[in-house]
Length: 429
Ligand code: MEV
Image (cartoon, rainbow, N blue to C red; front, side, top):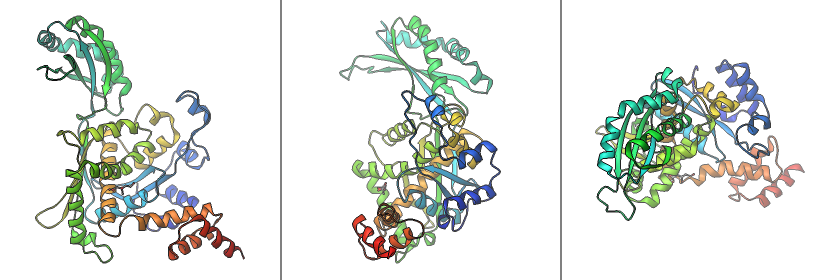
């Protein structure tokens, strides 16, 4: 990847953009075929992915530009139906790039497998028996999936929790074993579920209880990724708003979300606007990422902002985002979906940890994009520019006429299909 900075990319046609991309990348034949195919995911492949297939459901795939993370440039594929998201992420990435780029970190990809034990006659005894059998259980789990051990991962540790130990809840007591599994570059659902299922009979035997659930936890709080940016206020100046005004507005917007769940949900939805499109483009499980992210936003017992924004001593705006990030670069749809392969290739991602760092950086950028718009002109202005293009197309405009009609709709402050149809008619005459 030479650079993620491609001035004027948005003004080009789709095929011109593909050409630019081709110059920047040495695509494999397979990737090039996926890029140029009208239906990259064929019905036959789709039929092998889920049940009762009748077709595929494509989404626009756009590129988040200007991203620099830990000194490396990334062109970021984003699969999303919502206008303005890609433009906003790219706009903020450009500002952050001028401020030195994002810094990002991630832990090892340690995932949690849960085994639920009900009806053990002595919970404390069952807990200590399981802890004493730690090595045997870890070995049993690893024997069930030797290939992940060969890749340097596998089950590494375990913990045993007693739920409702003091009988305060209306529910019964139960014991839960957590198996900690390093899934390396895989999201790891199959690895984890195979391991917990394989040791469940031993757990039953040791505890004298009954095992019900054996399944991974999507609350992947041992597989965290974080991103940070530090932006001097002068880079935030927007129209008639000074950089300091924008900075303070963003901090107040954060405080609103930190205190109020009604605002936090929308604030966090804006973060997921950046995260989900990359998770989807790379063939990962966005429901898993969504569920884990929202739970993490409530980890202190109160649902609040996923991000943190504050001014440092020099007056810079500092943004931080840490989230569980259970994504992989091998296995699952990443292996079979041609666009997922293309997306990973385009970013030159070398590990799942690196992908996690990229994803949280996009989430942080997306949040700032929304907040910056909200504390200045509001989001409608940006939205309307793209919306007016869709309205023009819906009214029958094509080619160069789309932009002309879209601009007229904005100028006349009447972004409706009826109005656009009138303009198209006039234009044709
Ligand atoms: C819209 O998809 C996302 C926003 O509502 C996020 C936010 O309010 O922070 C603009």
